[in-house]
Length: 172
Image 1 (tube, rainbow, N blue to C red):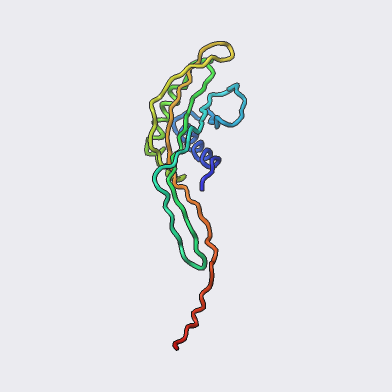
Image 2 (tube, rainbow, N blue to C red):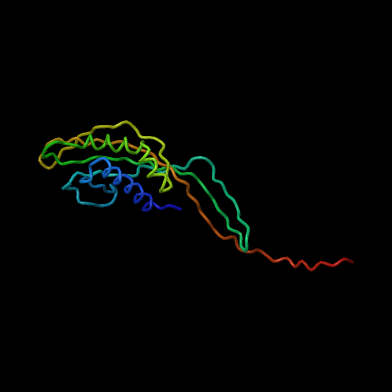
């Protein structure tokens, strides 16, 4: 079963791969919910998990061998928000980077990078452009989009042996 840490690590690795391929290797990627210094020194993509709904029905099966292994499987969606933050000191590339990453996640390279790690991509929303006031009371553009990936979650457990049957049966 994938934990939140595993999921963030995988998705951040895919985004970093996209940044490198697209020529934005100088951009950083951070997990937004973790405590971090709010002062951004270098251009940064901030990723936040919005929700993790479960859809469909849970499938269970048993594999019988020396022991019985019980498996429960469920496809689960993970909804993320990705924001580009860049301190303005020249040309603000944040909208270009967000557009490029959205394109990358839907491209063959992006889909393959996700599939290698066990994810599929469902959708990418429209790009929104919000504005925030920086330390100097200057409004900066903070473009963002949401996207949804899914993965198969599997829970495995061993079923204890209940009783042995003695097969030494005799005819009367």
